[in-house]
Amino acid sequence: MKDFRLALRRAQHAAIYKCFRTFNQKGGAVVKMQDGRHIYFARACILAIYADQPAARKCSLTGSACPVCYTPEKRMARADQEPRHALMRTEANMRKRKRILTVMSQTGARGCKERAFKKAKALGVNMVVPNAWLEGKSAEWLKVLGTCLRRDNIWQILPQPNLHGMDEGLNSKSNLGILEAVIKEAKILHNISATEVPAQHYTHSLHTFIPRIHCTCSFAMNTNPFITHIHCTGLSSS
Image (cartoon, rainbow, N blue to C red):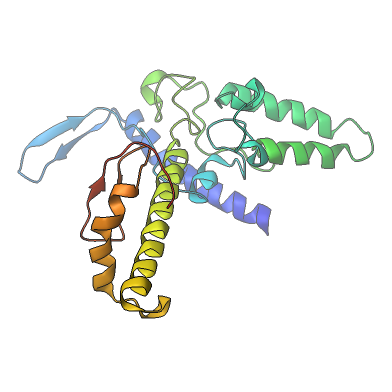
């Protein structure tokens, strides 16, 4: 069933990709804008696919590994990454890795297929279905993802899971810290339990808690309508 879902999703992605290729093969089109003007679009390109995990890996077919490079999930927290893992994915080296793993799975040794598939899973190399977004050796004017073989491919247009993961992590830490501070303040000042803290205490405590927050980037406080952005310089918990 899992392989069937992979094949079905691949067919759906291939149909989407074909729309772009067909548009480029026809030489583009003249599109009427809302103000009545006509603009000639010569080519359709996909610059980035904005998808979080696990949606991103459904496009990259890299499983639990990084969708951009070959770093396995269990090594993502390490500060020192091996060059073979930090290597950026391209169509060429993905074909090479799959070819090597396929040979490993067919050596005839006992358990060779299981070992090869286990290694492929760790590295994010799908051995069941080919990726539907591969450009191959198409002419430059037909390419949908771009003309650079190293940077313009399905894996390199999916960087946002990494950035979004960091952003959400900072949001989560900040929100949890603010919530804990509000509960402590309500208990000290008004002897209110954690389940009885009203919303006005939450918004009031933001003014006293924010100066103690230091984060490495500016990010949106999506869960609170009273704050738009916080601009600071490192993260410390209180």
